[in-house]
Figure 1 (cartoon, rainbow, N blue to C red):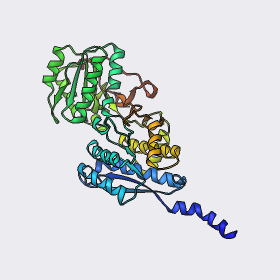
Figure 2 (cartoon, rainbow, N blue to C red):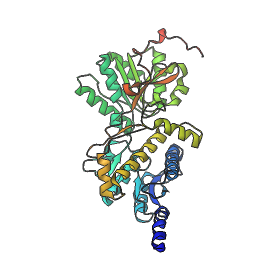
Figure 3 (tube, rainbow, N blue to C red):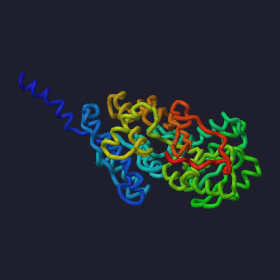
Figure 4 (tube, one colour):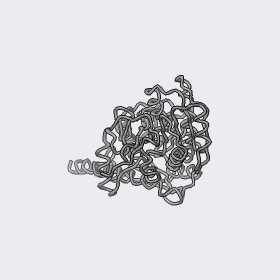
Length: 388
């Protein structure tokens, strides 16, 4: 009897001794390593907090991170290694859409659940995809807030500009398609090369159409160069939205000329979403810095995976797949909800506007910290900001 009781007492210890391996492929070295650093930190933060709370399914969580050396094509081989050699029970997607496409192919072929952390391009989730589940908003949703604001103002004619890269072009094409379906006049997408410094040609075309809204997709440097061209030429559309204007370095590039520009933001620390305040506090305590969009999205992905595992009661692929497909939950970046392909439909990037040198959330209304200010003011009507 004593032996039996001893064996029963040892069972929890044995379960804890058998770790639950969570595997991911990241650029731990190479040119993308710095960009992906916050994704790795988010994984570590989650692992530490989960183990401190008793693990997952009564088992200690162990991270197994493999280095793709910033080479997207390495994902196929490394995810096979995570499954066959490292015995990873749970899989997180890699860094970037290109690597995510390769990882998704492995997941589908091996019938293993993969939570997509960073793959935002449409080609990651194709018809028939069953085992890959997206947490971040797809690029196709980047223009939804812009379209909502345009429609609420009654503006009709849009001028849409996109940096010549796949993500920006996909976002712009989706916006044009939805705008046309809504009865607006978007015109064709104006594709511009990376690093374009002069937008005089695009401004002339916008003026010729008497465009009321200028909507652009690209990087902070693109948004900054548009502002400089606007100011030099004296052009001011009624609404000016540039995706990259939501990033802090946009403000550094143009200073006070950033005022009243709208931008697209996947995440803000001010989001009043479930668990966000706790996440921000934990991140600051652990890493002595503020979390950005990559950190929040990676952490949200782990929270989604954790909740699905709890609902399934197992890490067995078919039951976990069913749990993720049916899951509807709020995370620090917004609502996780997916379609039949596993593509995200709940999370929507926020719209922010630069007001008095700060980023204010102006859409969606449920997260807003301020009301948007339109029309975008003419250059001769502006007054210098007074230092507080």
